[in-house]
Length: 214
Image (cartoon, rainbow, N blue to C red; front, side, top):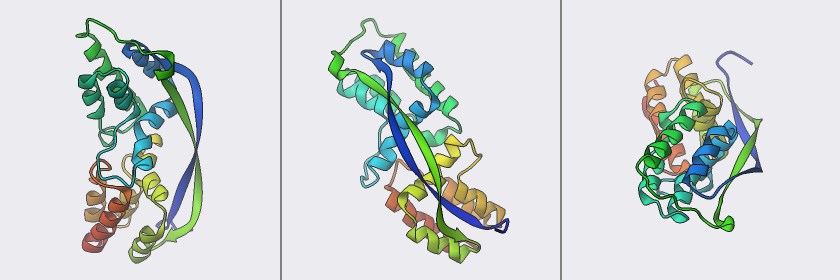
């Protein structure tokens, strides 16, 4: 396969329930510090795919639990304000969560705990990366493949590969830059999963490529 050929991949996730759990903010913080990176990834990203058909901004599991079960709306807003596109590694994302919670705890005189059935249960996600039959050697081929690959493939190349594999940019932009389409690469780098569905993002990618792919 030539150097400029783009191979499209997709992924399957295997979800596992961990022993870690939290009944209050303090325990939530302590577990965020020690659970594996795959757990941090799972709880901050799963809404992006699970609710890909919604136009409202997704929230991470930590923000949801803090608001729905603890009633700590201020902290929930702080946690929900953490955008995954602002971070280039799971370690940085973990640190952002820790910082938000620790700062909030420093001003919190009373800690609220929930009953066992409402505790936060930590999960982890083992990802299997699988090649698809789709490849592209030219920009027209690339555009055509983008129109037909699954949204799971879109998500993997655009967001997951960058953060979990610690790449400097998303796979699409890296390939476009390497093949001389700098303007299109920059536009795709700016796409935000919080402002549209994955279907909408696919349409934006196609539009960017058709308008700037020259």
